[in-house]
Image 1: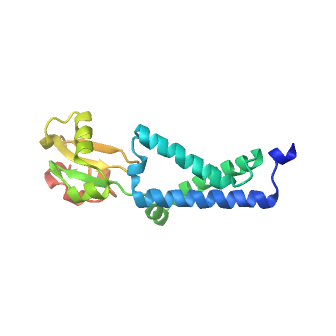
Image 2: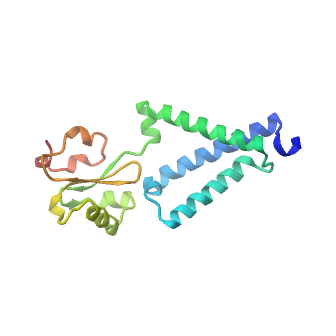
Image 3: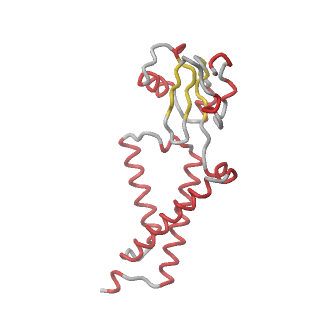
Amino acid sequence: MNDLLLITPTQALAVVLGTVGMYVAMVLLVKLMGQRMLATMSSYDLAAVVAFGAVIGRASLGEFPRLAAGIVALATLIVLQAVAGLVRTHRIGRQAIAVPPVLLMAGATVLEENMRRCHVVDAELASRLRQAGVRHRNEVAAVIFEPSGAISVLRRGDGIEPELLDGVRGAEEIPPELLR
C-alpha cells in the first residue's frame, strides 16, 4: 500500500525539479508568445489549457504517479506562484516577468504595429469596441491591451488622467487634448 501512496526523498526531489522546470518553461512560453494566450478563452483555448495541464502534470510527476508525488508537485506550484508574486513586487522582477500594457488605439487611430505585436486582429478590436458601446471610432480616447490579455476601451469625455497610462507602451501617442 505504501508503494501506491509514498515516495522516497530522491523521488520527491525529482518531482520538485520537474515541476520547477515545467513552470519556468510555461512562464517563458507565455512571455514569448504574448499575453494573448491568457485572454478570454475559446473552446480551443480551453482544450489547449487542459492539455498543458496534463503535460505539466505528467512531466512533474514522472514515472511514479503517487499521492505524495502529487502533493509535492502541487505544493511546489503554490510556492512558485508565491515566489513569482514576490518577484513582481520589485521593479526589476516586474520588468522580467510582467508584460506591460500596450496602446492599440490613440484616439481614432489604430496603431497597427502594436496590434501585430499583441496578436490582435481588426475583427477582435471591432468586437471589443462594440462591447464597449462605441458606435464611431471618434468616440475612442484609447484602447489598451492589458497584461491579462483583456482589451480596455477608454472613451472620450473629461480626459484621461495621465496616471492611468503609467507603464503603457505607446501612451505618448495619445493626443494631448484627450488627456486631463
